[in-house]
Length: 74
Image (tube, rainbow, N blue to C red):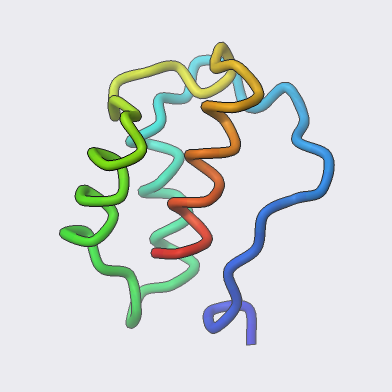
């Protein structure tokens, strides 16, 4: 069931420090091995203006939400 559901937490925490956006999205991809579309994630990241090399734990709340949204949609 978890592999079929995308979600964005109501209260975003500080996030994992030292983990880049790209690595965080790869981690999420592991939960959705059949449905994850790397090309779609790349398009989402580009349209949401998020760079994969950014440290997720240091993102602003708004940018962290953008990453969470991309992960949920992917």
